Amino acid sequence: MEKSSLLDYLPILIMFGIAAGFAGLILFLTHVVGPRRKTRVKLEAFECGIEPQGNARVPFSIKYFLVAIIFVLFDIEIIFMYPWAANFKVLGILGVIEVFTFIALLLVGFYYMLSKKALKWED
Image (cartoon, rainbow, N blue to C red; front, side, top):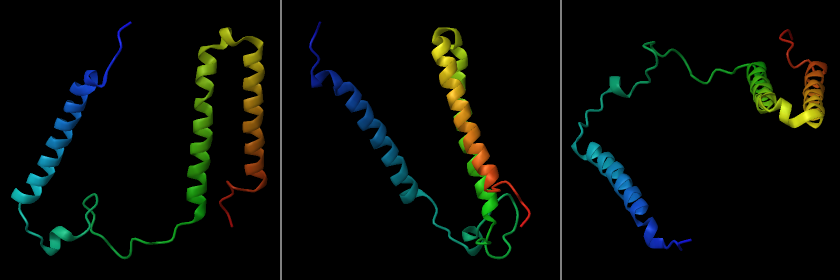
């Protein structure tokens, strides 16, 4: 087995150096060569072709964020079941017990969420 030295990594370091230098050069050139016409219309907020109206800092109900966080949590937890389904036969009875324990913990969290009325929209 051959010993590797730092010299073996020199082409990779040169490649990263060239890539970083190119990115930096392009960013620098766009600021130096590019136009500098800042008008009131160009500095306005623009989104989806809709003219901005009022203040963007309108208070939202926390329920929107709570539902989004709950969705993400349960979605990510369900993703953990795919590897189990792919290796179902290999894992055997111990894998089945572990997945049922996992599902039980999900149901405990779901029951807690329902008991706190996290999904109830009416105030």
